[in-house]
Every structure is written in C-alpha cells, then in structure tokens.
Length: 471
Image (cartoon, rainbow, N blue to C red; front, side, top):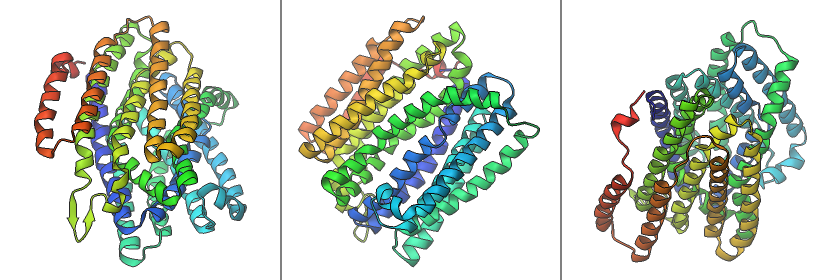
C-alpha cells in the first residue's frame, strides 16, 4: 500500500474515529438512555429521509466533480458549476417540500409533525452542500482540515444536544435543532474556504453537460445504495412497529465501526485510484491493495464481532449502559451488519476497473441488483425472522454486489487477479465465528481465541509494515 494512500487513509480514519466516536455517544449512549425504542424509531425515520434525499438531490454531480476535478484542468470551473447546480436544486426542492409540508411529513418521516419535517429539510440542505465541501477538501488532499472541520461540527452538535435535550427538555425535536445548528456552522466554514477557489470561474453549459452525463449513473447507483442502507428501517417499522425500528437502528448504529473503517479508507482511496488507474503499473498496485486491505477488513470484522456485543453492555452507573438494556434484544444483528459493510468495502475496492474501462454505468447495474435483492429479502425475511431477517437481507445484498463486481473485474481487467487467500481467510473467519457463537464462550476464552486468530491470519497473508509504507 503506497505511503500517500496509507497516510491519507490513516488521517481520515483517525479523524472519523473521533467524529464517529462522538456520534456514537450521541446516537447510541445518549439517545438510548434518554428515549424508549419507539421514540428512537421516530428520530430514525427523520434521518432516513435526510440520508436518502442527500444522495438523490446532488444528481450525481458530487461523483462527477471528484472525477473531473482530479483528472482534468479547469478546477475552479468544475467546482463552481457543481456548487451552483446543487444550491439551486436543493433550494427548489426544499422550498416546494416546505410549502407542502402538511401533506409530505407523514409520508417522509411517518409522523404528522411539520416541525420535525421542516428541521429535517434544513439539515438536508446543509448536508448536501457540506458533503460537497468535504469532497473538495479530499480532492485537494487537505485531509487534516477535512477531519478537523467535521470533528468541530460533531462537538458543537454534542454540546447543543446535551444542553437542549439532556438539560432542558426531552423533546426529540431538539435533537434536530442541535444538528441543524452545527451543520450551519460547518456550512459557513466550507463556503468561506471554497469561495476563493471559485474566483474567476464562469457557469458553463459544456461543463454542466459533462457533470450531468457522468453523474447520472452515480445518482442511480446512489439511489440503489440508499435503498439497501435504509429501506429495511422503514420496512421493519411497517411490519413490526416503531419500537422495533428503534431497536434495529440502535444496534445498526453500533455496527458503525466497520462502516467507519470502510468509508475512511475510501475517502483516501477514491482520489488515489483516480490518479493511478490509467497506468499499467498503477493498476497492478491497486490489485495488491485490494488483497491487503480486504484481509484487514475481514480480520477486523472477526475481532469486532467477537468483542463489540460485549462492550456495549458495559454499565455506566445509575441503571445506564453504553447501549441501554432495553435495546439489548437487537444486539445479535451487530455482527451481521458489520459483515455487510465488509462486503461493501470489497465492492468499493473494485471500482477502479470500472473507471479504467469507462464503464462507470455498471456501478448502477451492480447497485440495482443489490437493491432489488435487498427489497425482496426484506419482504420475505422480516415477517419470518424479524430484525435478523432485515440484517441478513442487507448482508446478502452487499455480498452479491461484491461477488458480481469481482467476477466482472476478473473478466475485464488486464491485471492478474488473486482471490485464493482472501477467500480462504473469509471462509475461516465466518466458520470460526459461527462455531464460537454456538459454543457461547465466556469473555476470558475470547482473549486467547483472538490472539490465535491473529496469528493464523498472519501466517496465511501477512501485512508487512515495510510494504505498507512503500512509496
């Protein structure tokens, strides 16, 4: 793994550990100890709406921006055209949604509350533009500034949440007020940073067309990805009620460890592979990175699945826990959701071949297959298996996507693909974990098991520090 990629990925990972750690405190420890599962479920619906629309409204311009900004000149023009488009579209949508808020709020957030819906719209607007600002910093390799700003935003949100909800009132609308205020602060900071970079640039129909046609498949792919990520929460509510949604989302949020790892790596991975994918020696390096990173992802999944369910039960005193005891019923889904994110990580590691072959539209095809499978399995498994059925549906969708893109890459790539060791490690990890679940080992036994597992993985595929730091 080249030094530059490792450096940026470590910066993003470290920063995201801090940010997600604070976010974990907010969404798991504070929420679960303040609110019962049915109230937690209602908050979850607001964030499902925000997350879903935050992918659709940019219309794929965010992905197109990263591609053209890194690989072409006219950087100021690509940035300005992207920002202007996003701002106009977001304002138009949010303005219309606000006008029809009485009709839309029950459909969007499963609650007849125009206040919650209006606050969700405000957060949505800031999130769309803030995400673009963070992409700009990533494209400029300003990783430190990116993670510092994101952590400041999370700290502001945490402080406001503690003041508004924990101290003054336990009304869930103040969760959204805290988020909207912190997102607004980040928005001001990012706009201040980006404005000088857009100086002298003009709106161009040519650039708009480039961004539109490149971004369209990514918007469709993003829609499918959000379907896989979020549809289960609405369907759990539909089949089992708001309380079940609260239980599901709380444990789903705990599984953020693997998602954090995957998306932190991807933050450095995407600009790196865009610079390397057009060179033959670069593509060979990308394939080696696929193997090394895949092994790391799988090994961390195994260890996290062994220990995280134990850690969330740690008492904090006065009847409080890291995850409140009223939510423990859903803890068994945590390893399954973390496994789903490992599969998503393996999928993201294969994206370079789509760019090299100029077949980025295949991203939407693979995502569409995953979304269709996910929806089908949710309708089949949730009535029969409850929360575990929803978790399995998510994991199965990402597994099929990871296998599909890998088989496609093996067929299309001009670089020799190596699959044996990673497949072996994945098989061993899942098999050993299932045996351990059946044996129901105590915490003391999990310590030697973890050490033996690490030694075994190292024997099969060592990840050497000297090779990781190679430039």
